[in-house]
Amino acid sequence: MRHAVRKPADTKPQITHPSAPLTSQPGSAGGMEFRSRPSLFTSPDKERASRAKHVNKSNLVSKFSEFTTSTVQSVQTVVRPMSVAKAPAAPSSDAPPQPVAPARRAQPADAMLKKGLARADAHEQPAYKKPKLRSRAARKLGTSTKVVSIGAAAFAFLLLGAFFAYQNVPNFAMRVAATRSGVHASMPGYQPAGFAVRGPIHYSSGEVTISFNANADAARKFTITQKNSTWNSDALLNNYVASAGKMYQTYQDQGRTIYIYNGSNATWVNEGVWYNIAGNSSLNGEQLVRIATSM
Image (cartoon, rainbow, N blue to C red):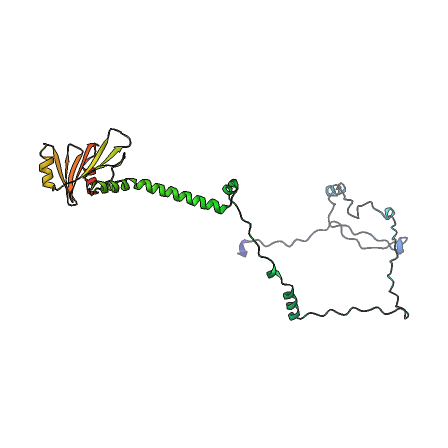
């Protein structure tokens, strides 16, 4: 696209003051006088020159510093003589020779092992006895811990035996009553909640009676009477339950025929023994049947 661009003009810088040749004049130094060559510009930048005069000059620059050689103080270097150690004097021929210690030889491993075994006497010392510690209770009682432990174990055994004896007192009393009355009597395996045996077991010839009372209500109680009898379930119904005009219900469980009458009373026979539950117990039919099947 050269046809769209104007060709630059060939301009040359114009010098207003042509340079003058250097000439020498007589009377100058060396018989020559030099004339300075004028600059290419007409006038220097006066504003820049005036601004340069007012620029702060640092004293750290040697060109502008006022430090001169007159302020330098002479420093005298003090050289101290060094002491030289004297060489040891050679021994005189008259002095007796000093004995030289022989070099220590390294001991072999066998010798060191024997030496260590000779000094190993820890196995000959008495065995360490651990001090016996006493418990607080033993310190208060002034006795050993072993005695306190034996006493505690014996006390616990007595408590356990007393608990089992208390639990088995009714069974033991029932065995005595059954033996003396001649009735094959037994304690019920099921005991209604809230009821417990009260008083001793009463017995006579051919009859045993157990009394139960409620723990929270003294008015609720019942008795279980066991007698020798030759009746069967039909004879019991005809001779005792139906003859008195009682309202009854019949239950069959585990080979037993149980008659529940008057609300909370029950009777049945089993293996020659007539059982009768009577009293104001407020027991329901399920509880009465469970008592009967547990005897």
